[in-house]
Structures are given as C-alpha cells and as structure tokens.
Length: 96
Length: 468
Image 1 (cartoon, each protein chain N blue to C red):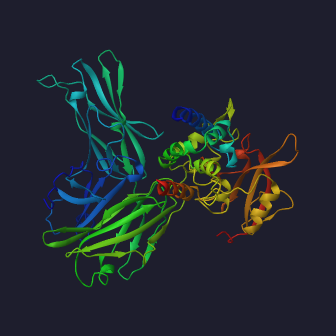
Image 2 (cartoon, each protein chain N blue to C red):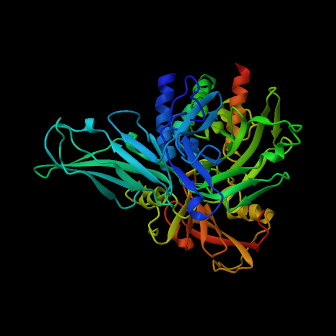
Image 3 (tube, rainbow over the protein chains, first blue to last red):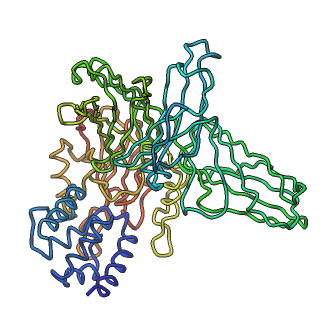
C-alpha cells in the first residue's frame, strides 16, 4: 500500500506543479493519479494524513472527503483550506 | 557584562551596536541590536526576528558586551553584542544561511584561513550580491603569506544597504598565479538580512494601539510597547518578565521579550523588530507579564488578541516572483507570452491559501470558485454588488471598482469556460493571483493572456469604496 501510494502521490505532485497557476481548484485534482489515490480507500487515510500534516497539498481534504463521505469540513476545494486541513487533522487525531 | 549566560544557552554571533545621541544632540542612549533564529531554532525565514534594546545610558559609556535575553517557548538564547555585525566563514556547517545582518548596518566578514590550500595565490576577493542584483567585491588578500606560510587575509566590510532584505550571497573567489579563478560558496555562507522597520505598532500607556506606517510582508515591524499599560493589570506591582507573542497567519508564534532587567529590576525596554515574512496576511499580538510571585497577567484585547493589519509587499520585494512568472512554461511555450519585465511586478509569493477569485473579492485565505460558466460568475459578483458591463470596458474610471474575468470558448460546447479573474486597482492597473502561484500587478489585462487563462471576456463594476 505504502509504495503504491508513494508512486501515485509523486505523480499527482507533478500534476500539481504543472497546474499550479490554475484558478479553478478542480484542475488541481483533475488527475488519474488523484482518482487512484481515492480508490485506495480507507487504508490510504493514515498516509494522506501524514502528507497533509507535514506541509503537503491543501487539496488533500478533497481526497479525504471523497474517501470518507464526510462533508462537514467542506469539499476540500473551496473555502478556507487551511481551516479545512486543521479540521481533518483534528478529526483523525480524535479517532486514534 | 550585564547578563550571565544561562546554563545550556548558546552564545549568538554578535550583530550590530550603534551608539546614538551624542552626535545628534539628543539624550544619550545605547541602541543594542541582536538577533536570533538560525542559532536558536533552525533557520527558516519565517522565524527571523531581531531584538533592539534601547537602554537608558545607565551602564556606562561603552556599548560593549551588553546582552539581550531572547526566548522562544522553553528555549532561551543570549545575544551578546560587542561592536558590529560579524560573519565567520569557515569550512562545513549547516546547509542554510547561518548569518544574520541588518539592513542599513555594516557587516564584518572574517574568512577562515584554513579554507585555503598552500598553493600560491595571486589574490582573494570577497564577493556578495542580493538575490539577482549586481555582484560587489572587495579584495581581502593579495596572496601574501605570513612566516608560517598562512595566507594573510584582511577583514571584509560590507555596508548592508537600507533597502536590503532577503538573502545575501557571500562567496570567496581565489585567483591562482596562473590566473585560474575558483569560486568558493556554500549555503552556510549566505546571510539573512533583517529588513529595516518601516512600521511600528505602538501600544500606548492608555491602552490604545496605533500603527505608524504600513505593515508589509518583507519589511520589518517594530513593537513599541509601553509597560505602563500593564500597571492596572499588575495591581501596581513590578513585572519581572514581559513577553510579546506574535502569531502569523494564525499559526507560527514568535515570543519576544520586552523587558530588560538586571539584579536591581527593570532597567530598559526592548523594542523587538520582526521581519514580517512573505505570505503573511495577518498578525496578532498578545502580551504576557509575570510578577515576582509567579502570577501572570495578559494584555490580549480581552482574549481576542490585538489584530495588526498586514498589507501587500512592496513591488518586486522578492525578485524571484517576477522571474518565476517570466520563466513559467507550458509545454514548449511560455505560460504568459505577453509578460515582460516591464509590464508587471510581483506583489506576493506563491500561496496555496487563496486563488484569483478570492483576491478579487478582497480575501487572502480562501479559494473561491462558483463554477465554470459566466452565469455562475455573474451571480457570484452580483452578491458582492458588482454588475456586468454591457460592453467590454477595461478603462479606468476612478468612481468604479472593476473586476475582469478571463476565459476561453470550448471547442465543442461553444460556451465560454471561465479560467481567471483580475481586480483593477486605484491606479488603473490590475492585480491577479495566479492560481496557487504568485500575486502580481499588471499594467493591462492582456499581460497574462495565454493558454492558461484565455483572454478577458467580461468586466464587472461597482461603485468604488464598496469593497469590504
């Protein structure tokens, strides 16, 4: 799981660099690798949280929302994405 | 020596001491400056802070070996100031700037003789430059060796320009007797420059807070805190410690001491100057004071903390912003083919915290995106009091605040897909946040036309002054 995630995450990071000037937030997750990360499901959550916590993309919230079906922190694409990240990290920590 | 070094505390490199007063005919005082960051906490620009200690001239005339106590969390450092800024360049070390200097002050550079081999040299130069600026140089050796065969090196003296900020690159260049030039550089030699304080937050004795100047990312901000405003909170007792906490963007907190004391009690006021990091959109400050019995009181605007407004950085404050935009590529072509060094300036760093549409609505902490259609944008801007202009008019009307949206017609749908938004400023120029990239000001809308954003397709306007 970890190596598969790492590969997908690296490729999605490349996509994020290429699309960095896109104003439409959907352009940042419009990637087969992002979809593949979401398809990994719940086992990917700790890995996503690790990236999210350590300065990774603010769009990780979109992946978590899709995987968990939880919408109370927003869709992870619009709004205060730093606040969204803090909310997801608190959610995860509370589950541990 | 006023302070002794607490056990386990690292001694900081000295920076700059300036004696003011005598020559200027004002009350003599000693302005002490020290700085901490790389030596305390590890070098990121966001953690830069300096401490200026304005001490009444009670310690004697010579401003040597005065100290400033610096704390962050549980860690404490002691800065010892004994003359001028100094940078020691030797072999090895950390892979990040290890030296601090202050804009408008001299920096002395000592190059370690152990860097050089015993092979004959014609000369050794010290070179330096700020970001992409021109390189300056100074000869520090003509190749002469002492009786032990060691190179005779003089001390480099660099006057840091008042407008300097960011990173100064220091290099040593040797020329051997055959004319071969070798450059010696390591990131550890770089110098972080604390910018001049161009704004002061004045916390008055009467409980007021006023800002002298405009707080801008990349500039220095001085906290001038009158201890008398704590008198009531302290119940008339003296404070043994007064610490200002400064939080940026609701995350990083720097703790800055405001009180100089010795065995006899409080003897001076520290006026800390912080370098406002690029990317900062908000600053909040609260002050904690401790009494001799350990009791703690807070000056925190009744728990809400003092909020300090942060404006936009100076034009091209970091030259890298412009460089990155000019060099941006999409495939084999330029992302912004119309952009030139003359038709736009950089105003802010890349930031994933907000996008262009948020910027047009005066927000710097959100992504806003109503959908891809013009209709969706009509509704969004209508909520903010904007109306679309019947004809495309990007001219400047001082009575109107305008926003332009960019887009491209879909090949199949024939419908315009919105891709970007820009805001017109008071000087008629436009500002754009480029997705998660940089904030820029461009002379015309067309500067950023291209594959990414298409071209301007619609202009909205509302009476100027309605922006929240």
